[in-house]
Image (cartoon, rainbow, N blue to C red; front, top):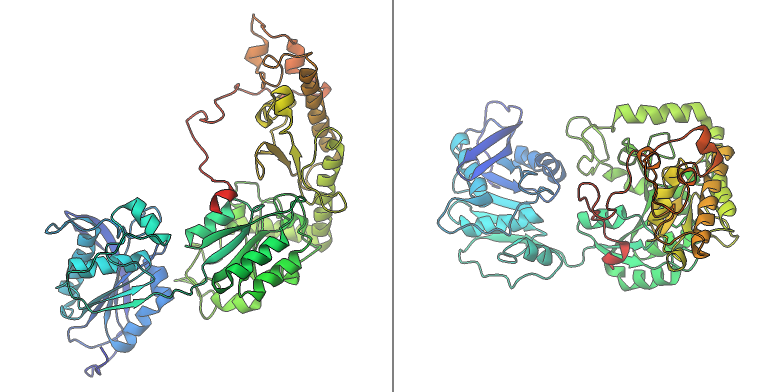
Length: 563
């Protein structure tokens, strides 16, 4: 490969095209790069197996292999793993090929290689296969299964041959608990890149949103949970201890500010400094930017990168594409690594692969936020932040005589939301947070977030969009529900047959010929004066809360599961 190429009359531009391969083993797409060369002799071939969640374009962009192909004169083929074969587009390296049978993904990859060698008149004695992560593990498998097809193997951050033989053992192997690797039976020149000093530890406070540890694990990081104190703040002593323990491998801290506990992290600058001291970067989850805009900036207290939400803060409805379409802001030292794009020039000098199909995100979503920001202006945005914080504290103060507010700052104030603790009511009345949520429907309200971030509680986040009159109506509904619970505690209402356990009350229920309950139809259907003026009738009663109407189950583990 290092020998000089024969002279050619002219250089033609390289081509990078998608092809498909089909065989009895299945079907896969692949991309083939034919280099920018007029050389007609048989060219070497490099087979590139991408890592999990990557595409052929991602791998080509990140490795710059096509550019090297132009410089040195070789073909490059990028087999594409299908999401149907693996949801994360990982090569299923842990399913070893059946000896003597052309089956499975190894047979598909081998078939692609043979097709390219044949159609491109490549040098069959100079075919090399390389891979990253799961692709590296598969490259090692290919070297063992097809020793006559490949001249050498390159493995970057992969696993040894035979480290796993099914999905469960593969997951264990990727966690550092592999099977005893098998000794390869076929001699094969192999180069391995696998550092043991990689920064893979991500510190995440227990107050974090569940998407934080999930995201960290998706990219192969080891999650270490940091405790919080009695006020809901990050326990700085615990953070310092764990940062020191994992100093050599500390990659990042993912922190939500203000936290999902509804408090401003009072030591946020110190928290960022501790992580930087040990070589890590700070990712600030900007899900709660509606409590910061116009008042503070993440960069000022030490965040290196922040994903700003568009829902809540910049006018996008929840579920309307806002969280996923939010802009990502970074400090100057990370600018060279901003995401690139295969079609439109974006990103920095060392850009990672694209994170969005569109080079600048969704135009249909971002224009809404742009119009909102332009109309509000700096003063309006600051005012919105102030009102959002004021509304949350107004609700907290009105409800505090009736329900404990779980976390507050040193001055007894909350940030953008408050957590109402109803756990103690189960012992005294049998009422749980789900009962309160269902009863709120009778009062005309959809319940706020339940059991997050603390199980058995209710998180209330009014934002700036609610008027005082509407906040009062909501608070009065919860206060009235607390009085109903009090009547259960006093024995005036039955523990099982009461307005909360039977909520919500549908029109069909309250107009039925029979009324078997120990409280009136009027109390069931019209518990507050405003419900007589305008009534929202829930269309159905309860479903099985755990299984749901279609047996759907939330698979999001609690943050403690990552410890």
